[in-house]
Length: 234
Image (tube, rainbow, N blue to C red; front, side, top):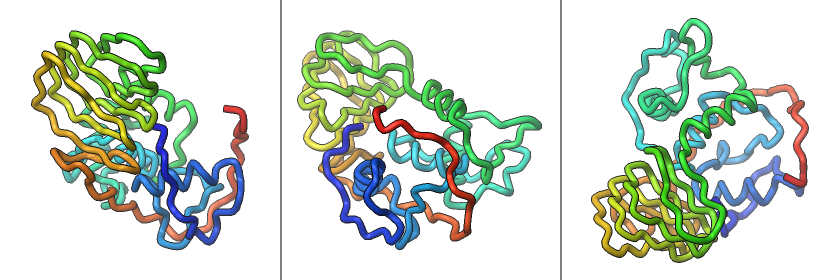
């Protein structure tokens, strides 16, 4: 996403580490803001927390007030519309017995599968590209021209994308503009909404600088230390 600005570190439990800057960047973008005091950087993350963060990061339109999962009643109220939206779009499925297991920790494999279901194109090289599919399109780099394609899903212009061109495109999905990125159209039709701001993208239509999404509440419970190994070179 290449968020370019950071929030002030007002978290009592966030020291200096390889993950400090990324957390402050997603906090500035309104994706993760903790419980007002702590952000619990070394805790494991639950399935409903992961879905809520990804929904805000990728501007997924909220869904209904319930799901068809067998354990629907266990989904937190603050996560329900996001989980419903992910289920409706086919982004996420239940575990055995059609259970969502909202309080269970999400696995690395599940996150990879989830992103693969959501994102159809991840553009990392300059030049002309013709995205395929109906999923989310993310433009990561500058000097990109989207050419002769139908963009029915959300288009995310990353913080380093700059001026992205759309030539002879039909744009029916939302366009999320991060930092100073812009979309310049030529011979294209657009019926989708536009959103974006100086720090991050959020869903909406027509606003040049929408308010950051409200943070989801983090349960105030003690959890065991994180056991996953992270590479600082990734």
